[in-house]
Every structure is written in C-alpha cells, then in structure tokens.
Image (cartoon, rainbow, N blue to C red):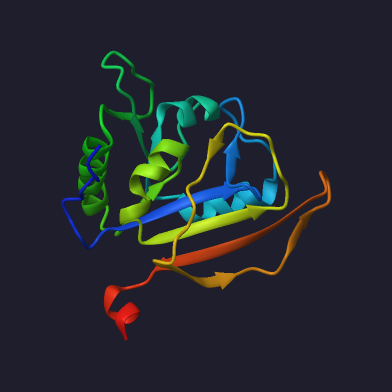
Length: 183
C-alpha cells in the first residue's frame, strides 16, 4: 500500500496510543487494560478534533467518540454506523478528514488505531502521544517500533492507577526535522 498523502501539508498527523512493554495495544479486539487516567488523557487530546480509526477499533468502542468527527476505515462497501463517516481506504479517510480539519480551522489529525492504521501512517506522523503501560500482555495487536526519526520532547512523572495497580507514563515524541537531524 502506498503511503497516504494529505491534501494540506500544514496538518499535523498525531498518533494517540497506549501500549505495553512489548508495544501491545490490544487483545481480542479490545484494550488489554483499563486505566481511567489514560482515557481522560486521550479525551483531553482528541476532543474537538478529527479522529481516524480502523473498523475493529471503532467496533471495540461500540459508539462514536463524542465531540469529535469520527472517520472509520473499512474495505466493506456496505458497512455503515450512526455518527461516523466511512472511508474505504486510509488515503480516502485522510483526504476527507483533512477537509473537515480545514473547515474547523484546526491543524491536527488524530490517528487512534488499530495496529495496521498506525503501521501505515507512522512514516508520515508528526507527533506521537504515547501512554507507556507497565505491563507485558500476550496480545494480538501491536504498535510499530519507533525509530530515530522521532525524539522524545516530554514525559510525565510516573503514574499509578491505585484501583488496578498498573503503572504508566505519558510521553510525547516529535518527528525530527531533516534539517535539525543534519546539523
């Protein structure tokens, strides 16, 4: 598959993801953990914006995310769901989402899963909003490895969910500009 191209290069592509020590993002088409503080963090980043996700990710949530424009990518030409916009390729979703973003006078497109969507867009992502979960899950969906074209620009203090005993941290990575990399 060719890399998706946005119509407007001023739009930043932001991955919002939580993964464990093995880069696992899910198991059996659902999140492998429940961390309320991570869900609040996700909501604070994406509310009011445009999100793109695969159909499995949408089905795992069960409904559209409120106060966001939800784009779902599926190859099933007959699939529909209330409250979402459907695209039949990642390229189509990103092109149409960029139109929504421009209409909203915003500049970010949030990629929220799943594993294949992250894999196909990592090469063009500008920012990675990551929750690193201190677990090792035997999952079946994974986030790709982050290469040296990204630099960590922020990290929270270690967090701990007292209810379920899970530790985690929030991190932000930014793509290193080619100019910066060569100097």
